[in-house]
Image (cartoon, rainbow, N blue to C red; front, side, top):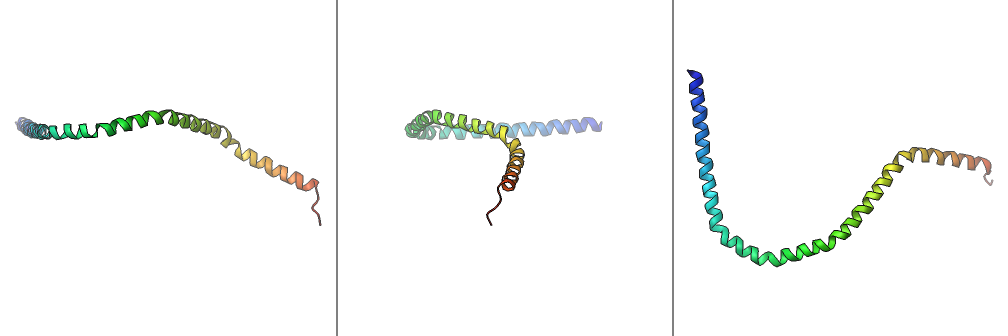
Length: 107
């Protein structure tokens, strides 16, 4: 019997939440309906700015594409050459040692 009572309480709570959710949705719909004319007016006022912004974005798109390709190429080269840096440092140090030992310093 307690399980039935617990189930009834859960269902009752869910129904209360459903009613509150429906009331909130109704209030939100009314507020949006009241504010709809203002949204339309501001949308029409801001339309030229949105169009200009879209045109600027379309003009910048090829430039950004070229920048992205260059960055991808530089990143690819870094991926190839960064693991070789310790080897390059070792070869450079050996070269410096060999160069300094074959040419005596002026005293």
